[in-house]
Image 1 (cartoon, rainbow, N blue to C red):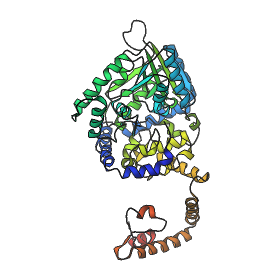
Image 2 (cartoon, rainbow, N blue to C red):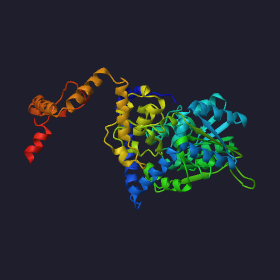
Image 3 (spheres, one colour):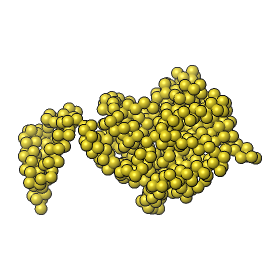
Length: 468
């Protein structure tokens, strides 16, 4: 997937002006945010479960090489082939080679964000293999000129029913439907022949389990089963190397949090644990099973100050609750992973110089940390990326000079008290009788779009002393 994160400001401005998008994004609060709040109440000890999940994820990350080797041995014993890819391009090449080896002409896919990293659909098409997305949201995006997903759990959250209805009528060449059950039935009728005629099934992997050599795939539509136990003779799993969990007990712990954090459900409709190809005497399952485990910059985080980001379970809770994401949606971020998690991952995976504005795309309100099921300190990681931008002189000169001046004053209490006393009094005068500032030097980014209430003319210290 092409990286367009350098255009964040321009794209964000366009999304803010899109009134239809603004209306569609309200679904984040009415569905995912309230759903999560209700679902976590069901747990006797939510915070204890979060802490346990954090510890289990870090146990895997801190000994990543050991658990990956353990997984490879267990999966191989059960008849699967495990392949490692250093880059996303390497991973695509491996999948294409598998397809050629088995004479594949059509591949059906369940949802996978790693396959977006790999630009897998384009690679398959170039090799003469037809990729078919079977997740409803991903299918809608595919038939809409291969549009990129805007959310890692609900990829088409930016569209409303009317837009999808128009799209179905145009692409399916059928009468326009507006009833949602009828629309989903129409999609099933279109996809069913694809399931029955495909040569290869491609899935992501929410986790891979080291002790059993299994992949865990979590969906709400059941399409992962159709991609793996139906006619496709080849099953290929593509996932990141950080998704390894040592044991099934670890998986059970994390699964208490994943669906609740992602969609507000106690459990997803379908949870598949798939281990090896079809054995002798079994009636379903693929004849061949492959795991393509992608590095793509992940090992570069091990042992660094950003290592904690690797325990992310890709639930999407951070973006559902982020006030920035709630207003601009996922396409503004310009790559696979949007929201707070994307504002950290994109600079780390793609390079900080290609995503200069993403660490700034946050209010640092801390909500993303509060709701993260594995307690990733996202605001701290965003601050560290901002520091690196300044250290590497990647921010504009005026911004760096402003921060230098601020640091000089803030480190000297007497000077800081004097500066704030003068500042609040000047701002009070600027507010005039309206007590509102409509034009602020060096603050046009704020006052171009809204007025700023003028302060009272006293500093916090003065007001606090007066109250006492």
